[in-house]
Image 1 (tube, rainbow, N blue to C red):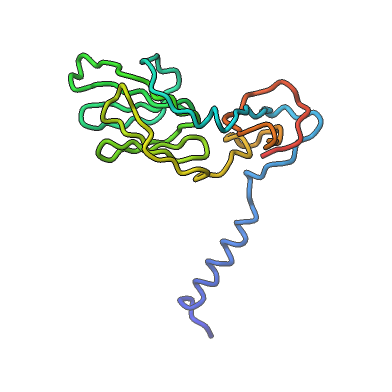
Image 2 (cartoon, one colour):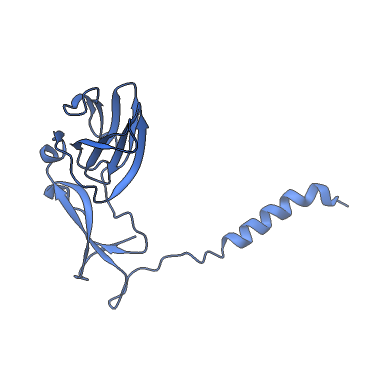
Length: 181
């Protein structure tokens, strides 16, 4: 007779397979009267997306990640770029500039080089002079193109690569869309 000790892994595997069939998060395909959110892609040309500029400071509209380096704050403006703030005197922070980086969501800094995503590209920027940031290197198509919105259980218009690069998604009232996630 086999011992319980030897059959435990088999019992555990069997229980896992049995419970795996009980997926309560399953998404059903949309129906004609579906009330879930609907999204349409926002397009831009590769030329416009790949234009990185140092601009005057501006108000933060949708803050993302914050990186602190040598008394400076680098605040990601989700999908738009990075704010640079001199915070060496924390009681009197000074906004220095805004780096327009379309599609930026992530950033990292080593020495005076800032690395960021630029929609589908990876860029390395010299930020030694925060008022005159320079592009050092670009790796094109380092990231996959956006083919669906970040939200789940939504319907959306399937992207058309002939219209350009998808740089975002906008909620739509129109329910006549052909994709879902």
